[in-house]
Amino acid sequence: LTSSVKFRLAVIQLHVTSVKAENLSRARKLVKEAAGKGSQLVLLPECFNSPYGTSFFSQYAERIPGESTQMLSETAKENKVYLVGGSIPEEDGGKLYNSCTVFGPDGELILKHRKIHLFDIDIPGKIRFQESETLSPGSSLSTFQTPFCKVGVGICYDMRFAELAQLYSRRGCELLVYPGAFNMTTGPAHWELLQRGRALDNQVYVATASPARDETSSYVAWGHSTVVNPWGEVVSKAGPEEAVIYADVDLQYLADIRQQIPVTAQRRDDLYAIRSPPT
Image (tube, rainbow, N blue to C red; front, top):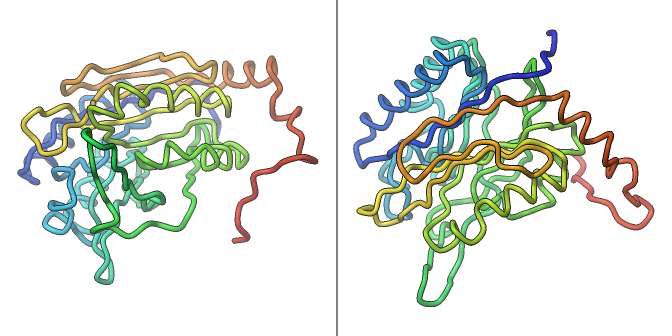
C-alpha cells in the first residue's frame, strides 16, 4: 500500500423517509454520485435507513449482515470506495444497538462500531430523548486502516466525549468520522463547535454526516454535515437540505500542523494521561 498525501472524502446528507427501501436506494445512488466525482472514502449519516426515534428502532432493526449492510457491501464494491455506513438500528441477541458498519472497496466488512455513549438528555422545555429506553451501548473503540490514513469512528453523542477522540489520535488516527443527528436545540449550539474542538485538540480532520432536515419528522435533525481540518477550520459544510459535500484531506498539511504546534511532544504525561483499557 502506497499512501497518497491527499484523498477525497465525500459526506452524504441524506433525506431519510419512513420507507426503508427508498432510503437504501437513494443512499446507493448518492454514493455512486460521490464516487463519480473522485471520492475514495464516503460517509453516510446516523440512522440512514430509518427515521430516528426510540419508537422506530425496534421496528426497523436488522441483524448484521442483513438487508441494509448487504446494500452497503455491494455499493462499496461497485464503486471501489471505503464506505462508512452511517448507522442503523441493529438487533443482536434480543438487544438493540445503534451500529456503524464500514466496508472496503472489495465489499468486505472492515468494522462494526456500536454507539458507546447513549443519548439520554433532558433539557426542560426544549427536548427530552432517552436512547437507553430501547438501545444498549457498545463497548469497543473502533478504528480502521486505509491506504491513505487510519480512521476513528464515533456516532453522534460519542463526539461530546473528548477522551474518545484523544485515544483515537494517540492510536494514529488522522481522520475522525462521526455520523450524527443533532437536533434543533443542540445543533445550532454545539454541532460545529464540538467538531472544531475535536479537530483542533487532536490535530486531525473531523467529518460528520447528519440526515437532512425534515420539519415533519418527530425528531428534527439540524443537518449541516461538516468537514473540519486540523487547524480547526471548516473546509466544507452542507445546509439543512439533502446534499453531498466534498473535501480533500491533505495529510501533508496535517503533518505540517503537528510539526508547527507540537502538542503531542509537549504533553505532560507525568501529570496526566488518557489510558485505554487493556485489550
